[in-house]
Amino acid sequence: MTEALAATPEAGGGEAHAPAGAGAPREEVLVLDFGGQYSQLIARRIRECGVFAELLPHDVPLEAIAERRPAALVLSGGPASVYSDGAPELRTELLDLGSPVLGICYGMQAMVRTLGGRVEGAESGEFGRTELTLSDGGGHLLAGLPDSQQCWMSHRDAVFEPPPGFNALASSPGSPVAAVESPERGLYGIQFHPEVVHTPYGTQILDRFLREIAGCEERWSPESVIDEQVARIREAVGDAGVVCGLSGGVDSATAAALVHRAVGDQLTCVLVDHGMMRKDEAAQVVEAFRDRLGASLVHVDASERFLARLAGVDEPERKRKIIGEEFIRVFEEEAGKLPDARFLVQGTLYSDVIESGGDGRAADTIKSHHNVGGLPEDLGLDLVEPLRMLFKDEVRTVASELGLSDRIVWRQPFPGPGLAIRIVGGEVNPERLEILREADAVLQEEIRAAGLYRDLWQSFCVLPVVRSVGVQGDGRTYAYPIVIRAVTSQDAMTADWARLPYDLLERVSSRIINEVPGVNRVALDISSKPPATIEWE
Image 1 (cartoon, rainbow, N blue to C red):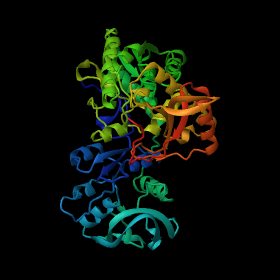
Image 2: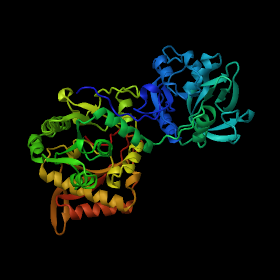
Image 3: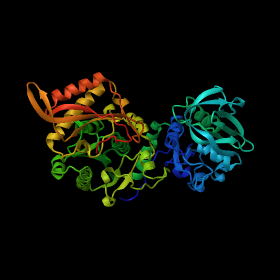
Image 4: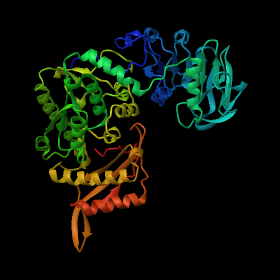
């Protein structure tokens, strides 16, 4: 896989990052990550305020930050104590770049300690909802907010004295100084977390920092990405051919739709149907792209080929490996039939970049760190990753704007190996796939009818390869159980089992047992993640 100019949303970042033909550099806020559990969420909340934000490591080179001329810097929280050996250090040069700085939790403590204030371990930590009391009218940052309000804390250390030249703005039971500011220097700090929903005035505080302190004016939105992306994709691709591997999920679908808007018939989408998709899913993808968007789509029914490779295999990792290898072979064969194809579209998201160790910087050369189906390095195609700087919710917004159907826009995550990893403890064969596919279709239909589909991160059925005794009619049965798995989550890193209504569960169970031959029992998985995972394999 060779490197290529990738389409990254140019909502800001300096001249080196502006799309062809763009005028003045646009605004952006850089969030420097000190290891906090909410660091991604800070960037998301800033974007929701209409300003583009990126998450970077706290030790990113100063020259790289200065070159981008950010409208503001935000220093995230982190798990360390600022006075411990090996704790991430705040470079004082960051405070003198001319951009307003907001320190959050560890970020505030690091700023205070670096500039001569006092940070020490408190008698007890503060975790969760805490009462915040303002002083001095809340200063500039917190002006206009209630004198007493709830906030979300997560810290053991506390600020006891602000640095010289700083004003203390608030306190809490465990934080003598819970907010500070030095408007003359453009430096601000808060001990609590404005990015979480448990801080009711958090978004208002962030918006005030962005608008009134940093002077941000431009209203960035996911929709604004489309025109910018189209221009960059056209410049990068020229008149070359582009191929995209469609999976049926919203990420690859949105990436393909965006590239199709940019280059039209130069794009060929390849849907490798391995026979383990959900009911009617392949037909829905064909309808969305070939019929609705008019895109060139090659639908490869390779189900028999995949099933032949999976015969007798019940070990989860072997299943995944076989499916991944076969996908590569099929995709290579189809891509090889397109002699002018030079570019490969992938639905890489910003969360993928961050979680795979990327630094999150908008760059013109993109590494092949996140390949669809594990595509090999020597495929010989340059990458176009038009969603590389978007979060999942932003991708859905773009997808709607591009005209994709709600069925695709709001489709729940689905694993690449498909139903194969939801048949647990035995080989994948046509009979078990049909049972699982029909049971899952019943579950999806009932969840949609109940209006709960968008409230769930994932909902699906699992088929354990065991048989249990049952009674149907006047006869004894010996059939498969079906397990219902439904979870709520924000990012799939953690998940809780969904409290589905009893009447809904009753309908689902009754329908599956009555309508799906080979099933005589339905169970409900009520495990959270951790300790369980969302998928069973």
